[in-house]
Length: 221
Image (cartoon, rainbow, N blue to C red; front, side, top):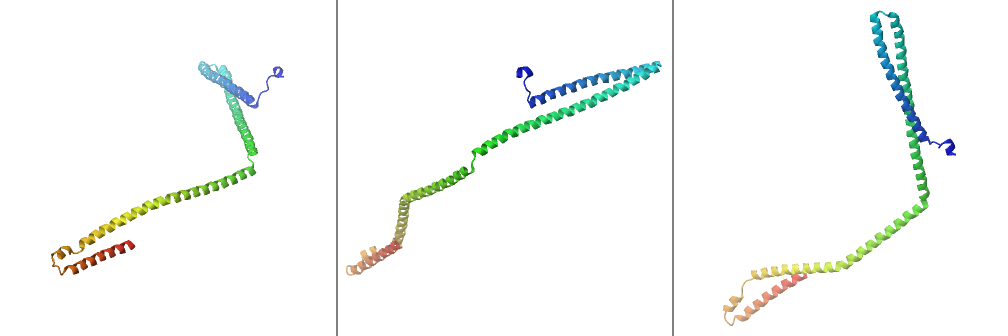
């Protein structure tokens, strides 16, 4: 049936067509108004010319023609303003129609999304997510504990060896300094006579016992 009655126009096409018609009408009115304004200037010039010649009857007739011309110019201006107002209304309708179409599309999209998003399934998904998150955190903590336990023995043993070495080094240094402070009795004992050797050896044994006791005390500490 379209080939008989023509294709049915959509509202957007109708608005666009009327908009073009109104724009053409405003251009025609502007063209006619320009002609009338030029005619008005010509009439004024003729009135001045006839007035100088003393043709008062012609001046009166041309004055009436000038009044009519000015009325027509004013009518053209009013008509153009009215057409422009209608054109603005059509532009507003086009904007509202575009907004309505956009809202229609958004509404359809929202309806489709709401049908796909079911609240019980979402709640189940969130609960399962929280459950799996807790399980993952527990496994991570267990793995960290196992790794810490596995690495703790080696680290502690190395650290303990370092501390023992440091303590022994400090003890050796202190023992050396302590031996340096002891009186040198070997030379004195070597220069004494035979009968006095036994007491000298006894004194030396007492000094060794004293040093050994100090070392034992330090090790116990």
